[in-house]
Length: 95
Image 1 (cartoon, rainbow, N blue to C red):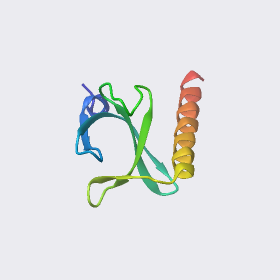
Image 2 (cartoon, helix red, strand yellow):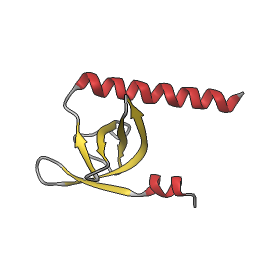
Image 3 (tube, rainbow, N blue to C red):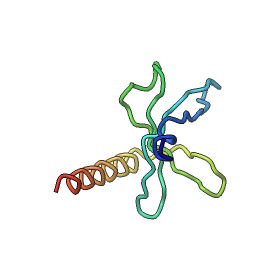
């Protein structure tokens, strides 16, 4: 199994505001404007996060932590950037 597949299959446990553990799967890590962001998908059914909803955190590599992002505009920009990167990569593979 490749390292990339191992990362995708690895569960990331985060604690929500109520102290409950929420499991995520790593979708990808992307760099936007010099900052790295993780894109996560819920690994199991959840009342607050849809199955196909992408959750984005700022990756703090020095402290090895994921930091929540409160700025809705930034979240949209990072997700749009990620989608454009994926589209460009997909289009490049077709040619």
